[in-house]
Image 1 (spheres, rainbow, N blue to C red):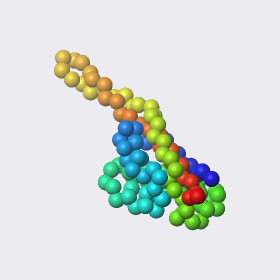
Image 2: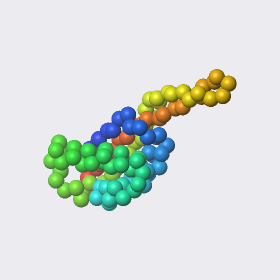
Image 3: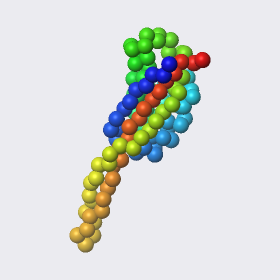
Length: 112
């Protein structure tokens, strides 16, 4: 049974989020939570929040009490909209600054 949680419009670039997401795919939930909580990246904090939400969904909606049986099955990091800002520069010009957002989906599954 696959249980998922989605975090939308998170203020981190999707490329940076994918790097951290690859480290925990296929790991048991307990070890994934431990490794993400010890990492200093902002990305790991956001993935950790979504992972804890998926575990809470498993406990509340599907009555799965054993967190030890859950494995991080998939993590999708999709592009979100970009916030477009402009920075003034020389000769009256302006350079665009693109602040990227992403959507993170975490899918956990029972160990078989």
